[in-house]
Length: 316
Image (cartoon, rainbow, N blue to C red):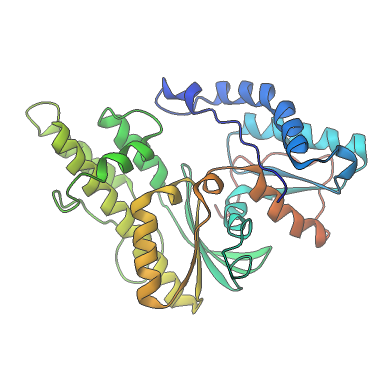
């Protein structure tokens, strides 16, 4: 990888407590050309050095997707470059190939299990090769990232909520409140976090007043532990069910310090090779889209100028 540039929108959406689609689309229009120019400059390359274009086709906010697709298709047509559209959930797993661990190879071996945990998705995938996978399980309601953000908003912690809860939880007692771990019946690799969110709401409503700083820390730690328990347990079940020995964890929630620590403990106990990208590659980024797109282009998985956005993607 020669360069990676991300234009964050956190400060724009923070005052609203979540992403506002119209504002996101407008910011995409403003940022896309400067971001591409900066990425080329940092790489020391020009458009003449580019051999192909990879663009996120979905899933996601349709307005933002259409801006990226329109730009990519225009560039493809103007420069005569091959184009491919990728599923950005699938691309999250490819973040594990972006950096090499010291003294070792550049990523997991196939087949591997990928646990993608983001603001919109919580999904378990089994990758058989770079572009072939099957869905093992996914959330039936709220994603883990969505649950973090909604609970943070309920507790008055601001946006993005995951980072705020992670920070407070470090000083809290994760055994203080026994929150439920939904869908933990043996054999199910699906997730559910709406019940956990409702349990937090019920707990807060029973309080005499706003929670104290100490109680906020305990609430954050206990809630976070319940989410992490579900994620790590289901990842282990998926590894055992498939016989895979490599695990990738990616997506924005993979930046969570407790989640990373629990995965590392599980991997050591079970003899599993664990691959978690650095936090800068866990959140949405173009580098992971390029990584997957590279393999798709090599396989001739090309898209035409009629490619359309997929705000929802079948199977996800």
